[in-house]
Image 1 (tube, rainbow, N blue to C red):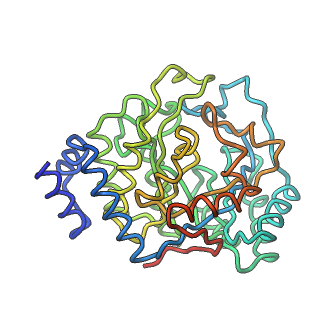
Image 2: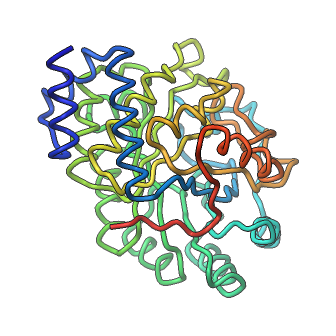
Amino acid sequence: MNNVLRLIDKLEKEHSLTVQEYEELIEWRDDEAAKILAQKADSVRKGIYSNKVYVRGLIEVSNICKNNCLYCGIRSGNKSCERYRLTKEDILECCEAGYRIGFRTFVMQGGEDPYFTDEVLSDIITEIKKRYPDAAVTLSLGERSYESYRILKEAGADRYLLRHETANEMHYGKLHPKEMSYSNRMNCLRNLREIGFQVGCGFMVGSPYQEESYIANDLKFIEEFKPDMCGIGPFIPHKDTPFRDEKAGDPSFTCYLLSIIRLIHPPILLPATTALGSISGDGRERGIMAGANVIMPNLSPQNVRRKYELYNNKLYSGDEAAEALESLKKKMLSIGYEISTERGDIKK
C-alpha cells in the first residue's frame, strides 16, 4: 500500500508516471487506493470547475456504419440491426428542443455513414451555428481525411471525439477488421489537434484481449497527448457481435481510472459515460465522485434511441435522456454537484 500511496502522491504533484509505474498503480489497486485517488481527483476537479457538471445534448444521427468493428452492435456485419438515419430537419429539431431547456453543447454522434459527406455535414453544422451562435458543436463521426476535418472545422464545428480504443497496436488489431489500422486512428487524432479542434480520445475498460500493461500505455498516451476530453467506459458485450460471450468491464475499475486521468491532466473534460450508467445503476454518480465532470443526456428522437445499441442493455430512456433533466439535477445535488448547461469549454 505504501508504494501505491507514493505513486498517487507523485501523480498528484507531477501529473506524470512511467509506464511501469502506471502498471503498478493498476496492479496494486484496492478499495483504499481507490478512495484516496477519488478524493484527490475530486479536489483537483473542484479547484478548476467548482462543483459544476456539464451536460451535453447527445444526438445519435445514424446507426449505419461502413465498419465492422468486432465489439460494436451497429457494425456493418450485424444483419439484425434496424438501421436509421436522421435528416437535417430531424437534427435541427433535436437542437431546438435541447436549446429550449438550456443545452449549449450539441454532440452529433454516429456510425461512419457514407451519406454524411463533408457537404451534408457542413450544411447542418452551419445551420446549427447560425441558429444557436452561443452553442458548441461536437462531432463524433469516426475516421475522416485531413481535408474533411478541415472543412468541418471551417463550417463551425468546435470539438471532435474519436476514441483511440487502445494504445497497443496488436490489441487494436484484435478489436477491429483488417481494413482499419492503429496508425490511421492515431494519425486522425493528430490531424484533429493540428486543425484546431478541441479533441477527445478514450478507450473501453475490460475489452477483450486487454491486459493491464495495455491500460498503462493508454494512460501514458493520454499524459503525452493531453486531450481536451477523454471518454472511458466499461466494455459491455452486444449479443450480435463476435464478442457476445465476453465478460463485461468492471465499473469500479473504470472509476479508478477516471480518478487517475483527472490527476494526469487536471483540466480535462471527463464524461461519466452512458456505458457506466448502463452497467451500474449508480454508475454515473460514482463516475462524477471519482473525478468526471460531464454527462451527455440523449436528445435523439424517442423512436430511434433503442436502435442505436452499441452494446446490450444500453440506457435510452430515463435519466440519460433530456426529458429527465430535472431528475438528473436532483441526483447531482444529492451528491454535492450542480448541473450546468453552459458550453463548458476546457479551462487551460
